[in-house]
Each structure stands twice: as C-alpha cells, then as structure tokens.
Image 1 (cartoon, rainbow, N blue to C red):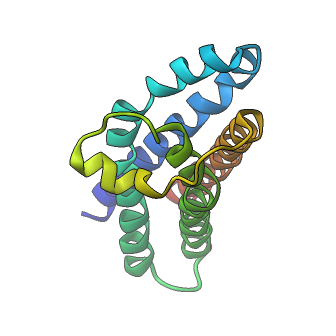
Image 2: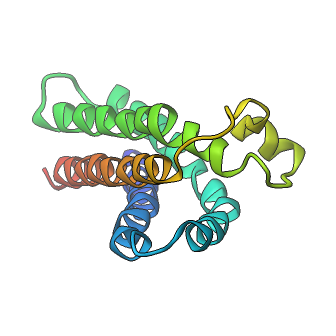
Length: 161
C-alpha cells in the first residue's frame, strides 16, 4: 500500500507541475499578444485547468499521508516534508497571486454557479491595468511551476532511496 501511495503522490504532483509548467512555457508567446487577443486566449483555460486543479489539493493530502506513514528522521521523511512544503507553496502562490487576477479576467464572463463561487467574481474589484494583471498572472505560474518541479524532484528522490 505504501508503494501505491508513493506512485499516486508522484502522479498527482506531476499533474500539478504539468499544469503550471504549461502556463509558464506559454509566457513568451502570450507576451506578444495585444489586450484583445490575450483576453480571448485567457478565457480558454478555465474549464480544463480548473478541473485539473483538483490534483493540486489531492497531491497535498497524499503527500501529507505519505509523510505521516514515513518514519521520522529518515532522509526520505525530510524529502517528503520538503515536497509537501513545496506543494503547499504552489497553493499559496495560487491564492495570493493567481486567484485575484482570475477574478479580474472572469468578471464579465458567464460562469456556472459553482465557478462563480470558486472564482468569486462578484467582488473582482473593477478596472485595473491589464498589463499589470497579465504580468502578475503569468509570473505566478512561473513561480508555481518552479515550486511544483521542486516538489516532484524531492518526491522522486525520496522514492528512489
């Protein structure tokens, strides 16, 4: 069962990294878009990436369970603890940097009731400089990709021990 949990945790972390890395790799191309083009492209992400984001929460839970089941003091324990911290950083960056911009992008978008609650678009905050919002959103995904990559590297190392 422990091995299955290790594999599951690595897979969930890989999904988490993959989503953030996909956004980060688009950065050079998206910076060439004007406002209208950027906002059109931005709207395509939310259905699939929101669904895939479930892996981010489940990866934290899986890493926490894996940590609890690993004997303290071992190198493996500390690697898993580091991975858990990195996964939590991915979420922290989302809520502090990404989510406020999501509200801005989706303010005038017709969303389902669940999506409206999640993105909290009723309190988006009105006008802002779209370039500042773009830069914050894009930067957040570069940071999230880095944190998720660290988490995956630490988990893979822990499993290899």
